Amino acid sequence: NLGIINIPVYVHVIYSNSQENISDNQINSQISVLNNDFRASNNDVNQVPSEFSGLVADSEINFTLAGTFRHSNSRTSWGTNDAMKAAYPPVSPSTHLNVWVCNIGGGILGYAQFPGGSSSTDGVVISPQYFGTTGYVSAPFNKGRTATHEVGHYLNLRHIWGDGNCRRDDFVSDTPSSDGPNYGCPSYPTVNCRSNDMTMNYMDYTDDACMYMFSEGQKSRMRSIFASGGPRAAMAN
Ligand code: ARG
Ligand code: ZN
Ligand code: CA
Image (cartoon, rainbow, N blue to C red; front, top):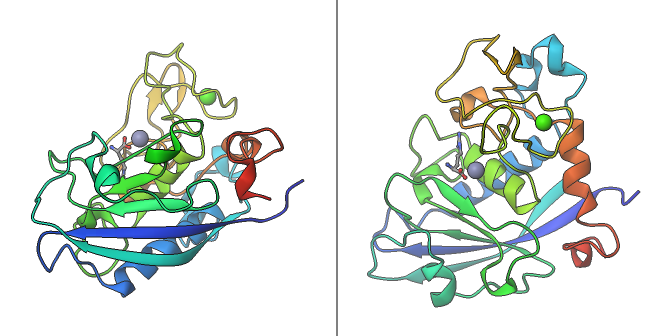
């Protein structure tokens, strides 16, 4: 047992206008959401239906802001091909989560790299208007859950529907299978693949206000990457 794992976070803010140069308050609001969501101390966890409430996990992972880097750049949209990471490389990615906050464009909220990839592109990218809960934020993605979702990928979680049909797995046994993403704010129960979907899981595609749990199976999948020999073992020292 590794106990509580603390992940230090570097935030790279890349801005082409003053709105995108988000405030320290906005950055801190996102760190708070990550801590609440990964410790199951989010104030909406009580909305989990009883069918799934026994599966709610405190992942025992927490996050500390280790530094913020601010870069003015005339580029107004950065896409998803890691151009921002080439321009502003990650700092100590084997021990730190690097987050680039810059306008991705194309309506994309964020994207992440799974563990085991190149260290030169390791981390997550989030558009500023979907980062944190205060300042330059845009409903219904203004509750900081894009970062929760992307950090879930960074810690090896797949989408809850396994990115495929009912037989496609997310490699987590306690998350019910589904055949595709759910959007908006689905009512309970939402039935697919002959069982109720866990639409309130952070790894679905619902609105920020409608996702509020990781499962115990997701917790074990995340924590196994920190074990000795695992792809993020250096983070748990
Ligand atoms: N579409 C993005 C992805 O697949 C993020 C989805 C985040 N959802 C949210 N409610 N903030 O990684
Ligand atoms: Zn995703
Ligand atoms: Ca599953």
